Length: 182
Picture 1 (tube, rainbow, N blue to C red):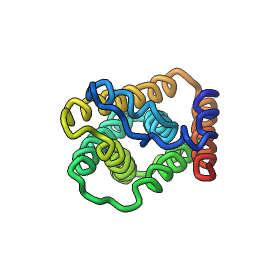
Picture 2 (cartoon, rainbow, N blue to C red; picture 1 turned 60 degrees about the vertical axis):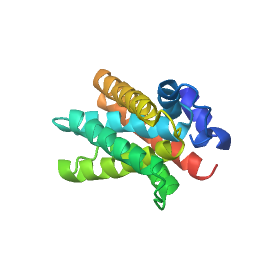
Picture 3 (tube, rainbow, N blue to C red; picture 1 turned 135 degrees about the vertical axis):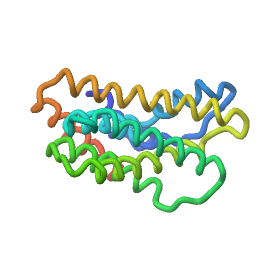
């Protein structure tokens, strides 16, 4: 966690959209979410918040994010313009971290809508950085990596007590705030 927080303080590490070489689309897709603190933090926070929310949210939130992520990736790869992508990505870190820190449990449909909106923005960013050839493998890669990051958040959420989970949510929100001023 210290490494993630440290990375979030450096502007060049903050946003995961540096471009890529794409000579191995699947591997590049897997690596993309790990290439910047913004995606790492948000996807991790989805798993944490799902744990705090409990019940069906444990599987529904990550699934909602991943499905919207894939949809956003298709839209981004198609060349469509989507306004406010970077602010939505930043908002995802702040709001998911805050929701976890405060142990917010709104109605599940509302939570899923918010998580899906954030997933769409993250996917769009991934899709715009994708290769012209091999986009399906690239998408599969970023979906697998994102699901793993959700799983990490879920795993820690299930292993830790509620106080520790809420602390991680707070740390995520603070890191998001640091990104906002980076």
